[in-house]
Image 1 (cartoon, rainbow, N blue to C red):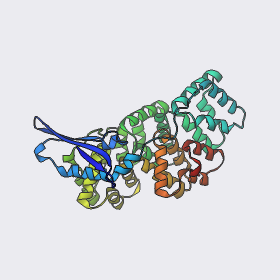
Image 2 (cartoon, one colour; image 1 turned 180 degrees about the vertical axis):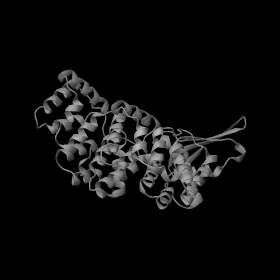
Image 3 (cartoon, helix red, strand yellow; image 1 turned 135 degrees about the vertical axis):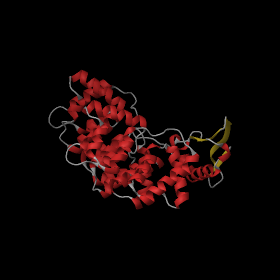
Image 4 (spheres, helix red, strand yellow; image 1 turned 180 degrees about the horizontal axis):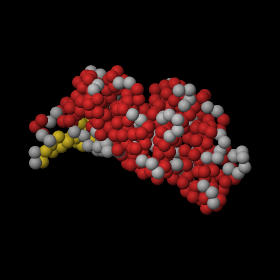
Length: 394
């Protein structure tokens, strides 16, 4: 049993390290009880030969834990929208029906209801609305004249997988392709989320997501997107004996930059588990003396480079990645409405509160402050309602 301690000596985490030999196979496991990031930190490390056990891997992992322990001990990953208590879908449907009558809808009622109910509750409201008015709530919301406000309200009505499918479809259809939308979604979703997304895409648009990606993108950027869209990343498995080899593959790919090396690079980043990649990135640092993100940015460019970087950042901390994307959309792209809406809606029940915390810690001002500064009217109010900012956030 190894205890990770903070600077004041207080125990942060207890880490159990054990080895078990069975028929020539060795197993080493690292277990952090109640870790807020179990998909990254809790891992089972397999090796085929206990005699060749590499303790430096465990030492590197313990080093990472010591650096991350204070934040991991105090951070809870959470969203901003939760199921509403005393939920009455019939009353909500009646209120929405009244708000949507006439040419000038009551946007305040739409905000007060749709941003204060979780997605599952909104779907129940839509069913009650259909029974009451023999109309489709989603279609009625699409008739709202205010463009960006409408996009928020419509986005809230899609189930998560259907919303991802909706965003991907619109990113690839029409004039041009929104590559950043493809990156944000495909670099950050789990295997299960990708599977559901592909099913929703086929059902909604009678089109295959992989085929559309193939036809709308090109080069190694396309290859990497296609790999991610397969949804075949290893889960819950890590191999310390392979970490140094995987890191060397990444290092060689950053040095030689041939087509073959690019393929190997994206195969590692797209198929290895998050647990494995944490160790690989540490080994890469040991081998090269350089952070993997800096190496990628120095060796590659364009959307291929942006996609590879996004994968690394999502492996490390998705909330920080989306905080960065929101800041970029607000400040660097002149308030890119589609990006802001997509991230707020998609992450509202997952980790938007955590994203807000990362945003303020990194950029000094709150996300709510920046939204209020760069947007206005009911559109501003809708975004702030999703963010659920406190008074001091403004």
